[in-house]
Image (tube, rainbow, N blue to C red; front, side, top):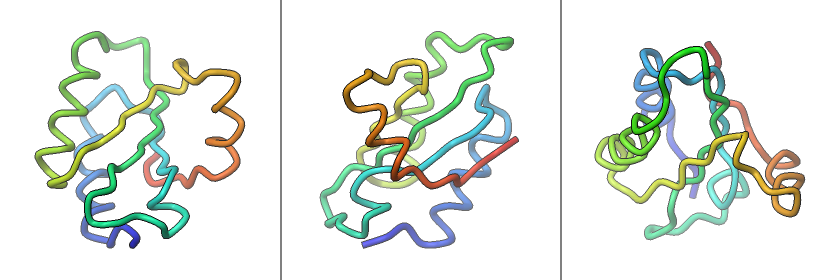
Length: 97
């Protein structure tokens, strides 16, 4: 299962007025391995010249409501040295300001 164009447009539109510089999909939806109950993995590069704080948690919850599925929202600053390389290898850009 992959995201359809409408779902990707929903994500792009949502990020337009958020402190997000770039957003990438990674994980099962990029690999075509997602199932009905799979969560959606999104990596974001944040604009730290704007307040982020609690808005980050709000973005996760908003996206879950908009898309009707659990979202794993990950900041590029929060990637560990162990999983980061695997994410960077498969990530697919879906939004850039």
